[in-house]
Image (cartoon, rainbow, N blue to C red; front, side, top):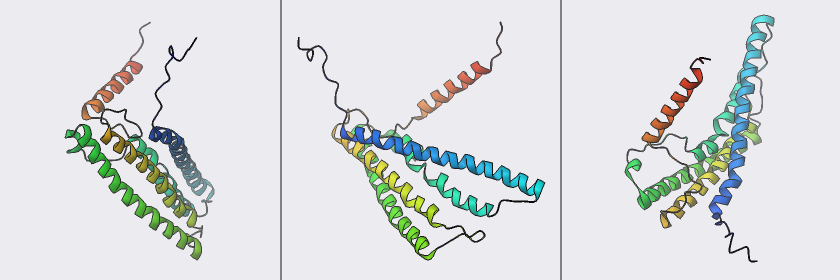
Length: 213
């Protein structure tokens, strides 16, 4: 018996969708690293306070450590945030658009973002190379600066890949406005945000309500 007639093959996911699934775990891992650095820096801050107050033994180069760590959690999560559509957007005009016009505008905005990020990657790498070649270091403890400066072009390179995938997703929707939305962020409308916040508020109230057994 020919089972192909009974079980038709599932539709093949577009290439941009498969690439999105490859990039997403990398973005999530980088965001996790940034979160771990924030947690570690919090612990270092606690040790710094207790060590200085109780034992008069502050951590050597604590301010320098904070300075170097800031690049980690400031930049490593930027591509993850872009994937979720978490960056600040001005939607007074875009929220009024629908269909192919919306995707064209989104694609143009993404092109502008790609150009800006490309410039940041280029000059960020150039800044890293100068710090590496000249042995640039922090003022107090003289920790080398090049590792934190390397994070900037690296993180923006991942963001560049995310923007390139989103551009491909928008261009695909320009040609097929009714196609499945793949590799682009879902931007909540005001109504969706209000509905979600109401549901979360009601859910919290239900959990806090006393039980009458």
